[in-house]
Image (tube, rainbow, N blue to C red):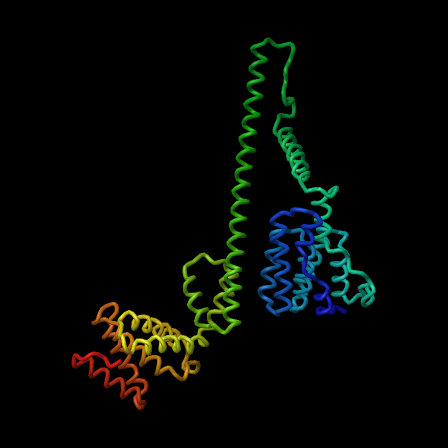
Length: 388
């Protein structure tokens, strides 16, 4: 039987500081992948399924041989009822590492077989990430500089292979015949040199293209990480009940190149927070409005009007059943603040306020605020200032 909850508890965060102490410096890509893996575990614990999947996908894309992350994603797919995706992940681990015990055990459990583990009896297999690091990054307990030399050797072998394949089958790499005269020998050397220079140019262009692609991927990763931090900050605002601040921050992001997956999460937060933000926006707008009772500054009235306009815009996006009880208050005080702000011009502000007052009279004819709106209209039409 596949006990998803028990298997999820088997996965523990990877201690980066401990790995650095044992192995010295580790590659930045590996570090980023591990951080995303640890973030996914936090999201799993917090029941934040979508963010956990996003983090795991990104970790695996950064480090395709991250078997621990792939196994975790398989178990997580199983917890969501997506057994086909779970099998795919476990089979992928086995294809990449045929010695993977854990992935095979998970497949056996999906098939209803005995996984061969007594409860609490078998010691958990060594973390494959740590094993990979130990094999690839820490020979003779020194820093991993030798990997660069191995990489250089491999590239050299590949380059020689490319040269060999590109040369005609019936002609050696450099042909110097003792039977030809010096001019012929020089021409042969020149021809060989031209071919080698052409190959070098092609390899150099290929290397430049690879470098540009790597830079593009790194830039994309950095942008993704930056937007992930923004999403976490918005999550924190929602968790703290600061819905007005969340709405304001999201609207500031309009038009920016947000990654599609993160933009979807941001818009879900935004849409769910807007109805809750109306009351907070009204309190902010009314507080600014009341604070200006003595000074009657047009700039302060404009600040209040901007807040009221934000609340009115959100209200008009909601259906009638979801509109707040204080809707009429927001319209009435919003119209007064707009008229008193005289922004962008006195005539434009007065016209906008008149439209709102008339809407109140039409939609709420029997309310006190319909009566108050008529008084404000009379003030405007008689050339008197609107009563604060």
